[in-house]
Image (tube, rainbow, N blue to C red; front, side, top):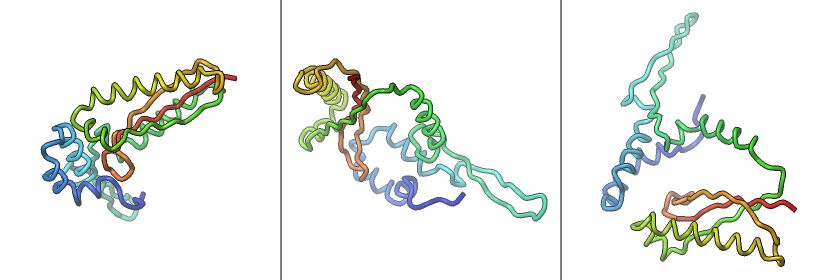
Length: 170
């Protein structure tokens, strides 16, 4: 199957070393490992195997994957399966998608104090959603919700925000 367009691994292979040098003081060893795994994923560095057609002799080389849980190439099928499994758990009710973004000034603080800032973010959002939802001028309901913390934006720059899926029944 042919690849379509640029992948995260391509960006890491091209710019990863310079990025690690520039940001050495703030990257954790785990982040270094993940970047390296993604850079090496499906390359000769991880080994591979050759398939050969019994009829025409055509050969195809398949390189091994890194199998890192953060690798977008390796997690494509598990992610799709996880999404399918979650669809069966959805309730037949109205859902609201809400995004809370941290201001740039606080994002800089969050970069060095992740646990503290993200705990404050989750508590503030929880209290805000529950207060507004309980108000009869809005929903007048007790809601349930789940949240996902995103620490990077689509441009791969730090952008802490949390996405909430709130549900309520009429």
